Amino acid sequence: MPILTSLINWFNVKRGYQFELIRKYPTEVQQETFMKLISKGADTQWGKQYKYASYNDIADFQENVPLQAYEDVKPFIDRVRNGENYLLWPGEIKWFAKSSGTTNDKSKFIPVSKESLEECHFRGGRDVLAFYLKSNPDSKLFSGKGLTLGGSHKIDNYNNQSYYGDLSAILIENLPFWTDFIRTPSHDVALLDRWEEKLEKITHETIHENVTSIAGVPSWNLVMMKYILDFTGKSNLLEIWPNLELFMHGGVSFIPYREQFRKLIPSDNMHYLETYNASEGFFAIQDEPDDEGMLLMLDYGIFYEFIPMEEFGKEKPVVLTVDKVDKETNYALVISTNSGLWRYIIGDTIRFTSTYPHKIVISGRTRHFINVFGEEVIVDNADRALGIACEKSGAQITDYTAAPVFMSHDKKGAHEWVIEFSLPPENIDYFASLMDHALMSLNSDYEAKRYLDITLDKPIVHAVEKGTFYNWLRNKGKIGGQNKVPRLCNERKYLEELLEIDKKLKNNREIH
Image (cartoon, rainbow, N blue to C red; front, top):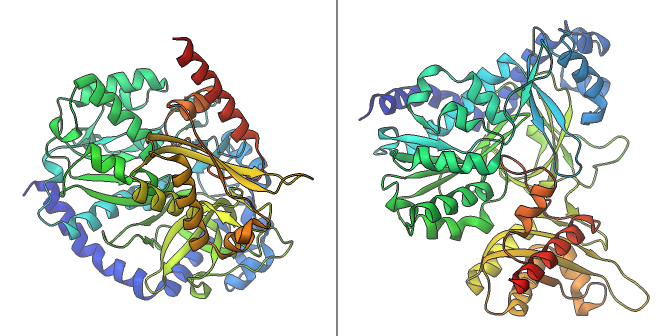
């Protein structure tokens, strides 16, 4: 057994007790986390402004500290980036994770403290391996290297006080030196920000390595995998990396991509493990391979609150702690962190698949849904419906987005879908019907609006040219890393842009 595997197994024994506390005593673990955060934050300007030193419990905190969007806390973050200390978190913060977002073109700069790196992000990485090795004790993961497809923004110097870049770049910059021996590509290649150059150099550096694991966003990893296969002329990845056994994924739902990965990695010994790791923190890990729910990691220095989506947007919404949630509700996630984000709404929505232990799936974004006609379709519905349609039709999807067709005097409303297939269905109308019926089975509000086509007409599905979504992202300057296309939107801007790109690609193909 490789020495690293032995060390991780030893760590897993010691960490196992803490995992049980998370599963059985979530309220107590979160209470302890909350008190540590408040104690740390009391001496900051933010903590003094909101009188943290006077709080006796969580209720005091919720009553006195308002919920925050990025725009609310941005003036503080700008000052921290310019070198001011003890504003949001004690001590110096010099790292900022750049997040381009998906609903607008404005960049966000999320503070990443030393505590967040050590107690949250790096601890999360260790726990991922601990869970995996517990489920796969005969693993040979550390007989080779892990390939991590990092972000598209290298570390840049904002001023003499701070640096910014993709979270993946910040993590690479701060990893211990010895991790260079167990990962690929090299530091310099991993941090390249020109996507085409990065693909080429990753290919040259990794095809002769013994890669045993891959980590990253499924959509961009598919682009990389297909590039490598085209370069090598191989039919699947196991011909290049025969010991490949694990793909650790996050960022987008894996459901639309699962069959493509199985085709590219045709092995019953290949494992898939989902994580929920964002710029703001490492939140959850799929701790059991046969359970889609991810265990909410409650001892990473993050205090969680949850807003039921029917309350979201109200002036004084109901906000729940972990002991008050249920499995029936879609929640907007609110976090207070050991990087100085306080009651921060990150924009993701989650749903609990179980409580005690508290396990979640990401259901979408607070702004990514279609609810023009009262149908309340969320990304989780769309992913699952497309997964069902793909399974029954044999199709495979690369990317998709959807938007409403608005009612007019002579037509009913509908949903219009732009889908890029890697393997198209034989009959697009049959695929649309499968997806439509799957959505009705998953969402009773959608089903009610589709009843007898009275409110919503059947969905319109466009199968667009390969490369449509890639070109859209390139036009937006969002190639690589964590960038992704908005899945659902209440307005038609993105959909119209994609259809225009598809039209140009079709015209170019016909000319040539």
